[in-house]
Image 1 (tube, each protein chain N blue to C red):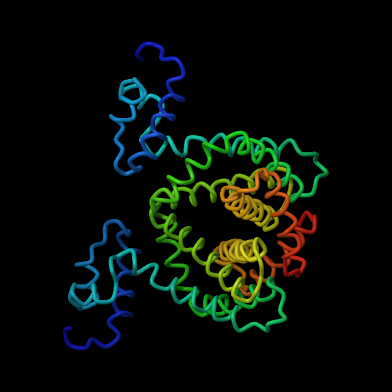
Image 2 (cartoon, rainbow over the protein chains, first blue to last red):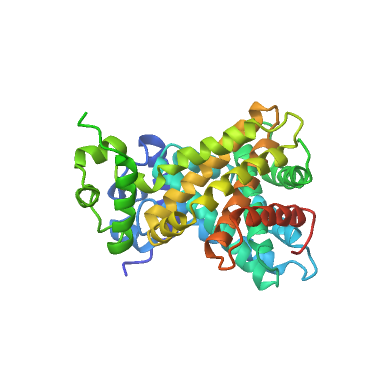
Length: 190
Length: 190
């Protein structure tokens, strides 16, 4: 291990996001990211497996937040209400990081490989929610369906929020999505 | 163009599936597929862009079937009922091709790249359903939510059906999934 670098991970993330935005994800190398952050490549690889990981390092934290919040919901809560609590907790984090989320989304949506990776991440989140519901005694296929429904709401809410211009928080899009999916499944049109 | 080869596409698919099953997807080459089918590599590339395409060539047909069935639903049908009609039409096709579906699933699930490709395919199907619903006048976010809900039901139903041992058709899993998601969104537990 080299000497201690204060907030190396955050500096590397900041440098990577700047470079991905300036010259594109494909054109940026780990060498350049480390140089921009004033750190060595060796330090980069202590924090991230590769340059893609910088964009997806947060998804483990998001999954943890979703699963922990779901697990903390009252035992009597209906599955969809436990999932809704998890989505609301995630929305609060996204609202605190709107600028970073916007910048990241611009990079991910410009690259097919990154878009695919994002879909894999969403599928993992759905599976983690389902697993957490089964641990609460929710049977199949209800657990998997509730996990998929939660991620469907999250995906549509995120897309709305990332494009919004009226300052509505992500939480408002989550509520709209939950209500919207309830209405759709009850045979509504909107 | 070479001489006409009777059912070249079907023979190539059959050969590819046999080889993927026998020696694994990664280990199989286009040269071997063409040889097994008694055809030339040139003929292979007239029908498929690469060896992955053999496994995903059917997804354009599936998307067409889903979209056409949805578009053909009565104008007064609720969005979820139009989506349900599309899923039922798809289920009937899967039931006719159970052996091929099982064999294909075994190959896809054994390979990370193919599993990612499958997620991309499902996301495209969801987007196509949403677009078709918007064309029927369904507003956002209801159209996207109904598209996502349809694919969530399809995914969970397919997983159940592919693992079933009691002979229930895919259509039964689709009905169970639709009813299950309705119940979940209405606050039920199972």
